Amino acid sequence: MGRRPVTSGLSHVSPQGGARMVDVSGKNVTERTATAEAWVTVGPLIAGLLRESGSVAKGDVLGTARLAGILAAKRTSELIPMCHPLAIDLVELEAELEENRVRLVARVACDGKTGVEMEALTAAAIAALTVYDMVKSAGKEVEIGPVRLLEKTGGKSGHWRREGHAGG
View 1 (spheres, rainbow, N blue to C red):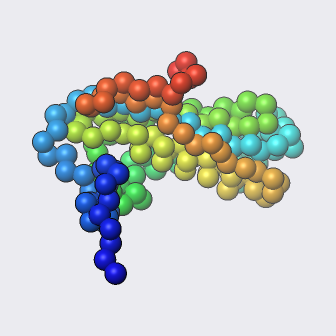
View 2 (cartoon, rainbow, N blue to C red):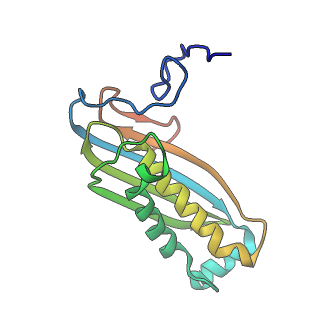
């Protein structure tokens, strides 16, 4: 039985239903930015350890998460099959403890033909996984989520901001 044609308008799906990389050769280079966040609920015990020393047995949790997120953003096209490799100009990753949760915010920018949303989301997600990896020995109740795009600029669709998100 053959595949049914896809008529959904998904950019990474061919008319025959297969995965494809989008052709960006005709697009203009514009400044692109994206901001994404990830949350890691660590619970009161681990939050207390992070508040006291910033580290657990494996070391500096938030510093290591920041570094992992930055490295991940630069390798997004190696991890996500249909992502274009981009010359990223900026990756910033903030990591802070808010009560019993860690909030990770990734900002990515470049001048390019396609957006950096996936790079920002990858940075935030890998930073969250790094927090999880570093604190899991101190408690098994750690939970990741949500991971979500907060804002993006550039390209044909212009500026978008998640409703209810004031930025920063």
